[in-house]
Length: 441
Image (cartoon, rainbow, N blue to C red):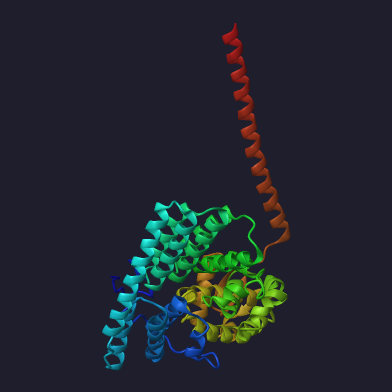
């Protein structure tokens, strides 16, 4: 049985563990027309369950509804008695109403035992008959059963065991892709990346549908590991048509792709790249149509309407707090994107009054802006100094002649180092040649 931990909804041990201690509370999303049930209806299975529990842990006003949705999905789509009991207990604490889970548990336990016995019997018979095809088929049945029970680690092990029964590379690739899907549901991004690499090793030229699924899985893994530039590069080549089968599985949606691409792009790309790779990208535009708020954010960013961009960013991130892929990185993303906006804001100026800048960029006070600027100056994101007397930020200007001289000096040092190494090499060769001549004499 899984342990109950105090963190986010993750896999602990074999089962999905859930927190009985609420994490830091966040308000409901401020996006217009947000409806939790409608939002979660776009997912199914453990993708839906994971998101529902993630919302319940973080948003007190939505917790009863989200846990109820998770319980419905667990009851109708899974055999996961461990997570089911945890959710029922959480709802009992929140509502004071006790739910009888024993009848469902008995029925499910009986079904699981019957299916497990049948599948293992098939496996044993197939192995005795040395039938790789039947063994692999039984192994797949075992994988599905373990997934329904919430035993994701066991499902991955069953997938790994199935490799010895594969008749060719495509069958191995299918096992690796499924392992990547299971790892995706658990939020184990390093494992997702590993299984993608193994898939590509045995299937170097997949069809368009397989390429699209691998691109989605890789982008989620890169986003989960904060590799913003890599994530956006993979997403901008994706199209809704080629990824339609991926979306049909209801583990990721076009709206998710729009969010990943938009936030990763604003965190990693410069202003012109945002225009070229996202706003003017016809394929990515199909995803932006599913999330107009992302389109508005990107356009405001490119048009230098920074107050509009920051207000829209705040609204979008209020929604992203409830996303298990984006949620853990909201603070990092917000700081990264705000820093990029600060850099863009001061670009045209030699100096700028900080009080005006604080107002334009939606800082609560000039002191908050000053703290941000100090951090950015220390980290080398901007080259400027703060004049505390006048309240101005003054950029360092580089003299063209001094810059040219600096480049020449750098080249001279590199050339001198190479010449020194070459001289030492020649001296070594001369000494080696003299030694060999002496040995022959």
